[in-house]
Length: 145
Image 1 (tube, rainbow, N blue to C red):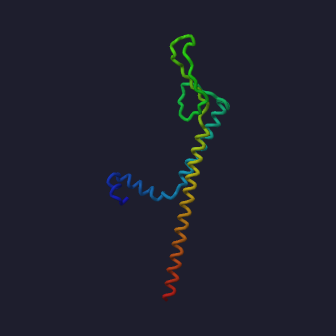
Image 2: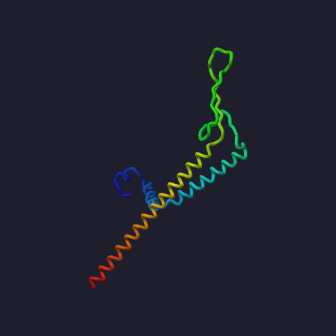
Image 3: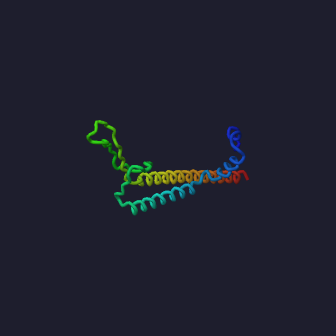
C-alpha cells in the first residue's frame, strides 16, 4: 500500500497481508464456496430439527429467541380471582427460522455470483481492448515499414 493514510495506521504484517489479498480481489470463488457450505449446514440443521421435533415441534419459554419463528405470544393473569393484574408472559416458539436463514444465504450466493460475472465481463472487455490496441499498433507499424 502506497497511500499515506493506510501506511500510517497499518502494521507491517497487515500491509503484507493486504498485498497478498490484493491478488485475490477479483476472485470470489472462495466466498461462493464458503456460503454454499453454510447453506448446506443450514439445510442439515433443518433436517435434524425436523427429525427430532417433527414438523410442528414447539419449544417453550427458556430458549434464546434469536432466529426463531414466533408461533404464539400471550399474557395471562397470575390469579384469575386476584385484583393484582400482574401477568405471566408465555412465549411459545415454533422452530428456528430456517426459511430466513436459507433465504439469506441464497441471496448472498446470488449477489456473489452476479458480482463475479460482472468482474469476468470487465476482465474480458479489458483483454479485448488490449488485443485491439495491440493489433492497431501492429497495423500501424506495418504501414510505416
